[in-house]
Length: 143
Image (cartoon, rainbow, N blue to C red; front, side):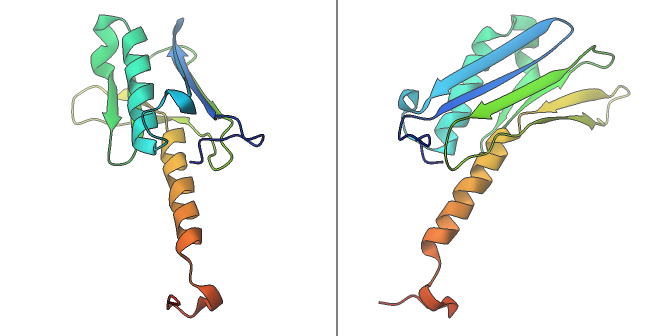
């Protein structure tokens, strides 16, 4: 994650999801983050999404600080679930999707993964790997 768009301006990160007429969204500019890190981005998105949810749905939104992800549990039978994720960051790619998850309980529910943040982590790891790659590909760093 660079924190900059192609023109050198601060990156913008947007995410939204919903079902059955409920919509929740969050938008952050890189300058709003305490640090331009995936951890800060995930925490900021979680805070905004959580603040907008009705109290009865707050427990359905969870954060995974190890894998930099957010999950929202969508009830069975929900109509028109959707997810959207965008970014202007030059080193990040948005992604997201709906996944069916089976639970050990008698009922199952749809889990809504905001995986774009996970792909941001992948982009950051890829960028770090390029920066640490050894000249000549011999596996040894030159001193």
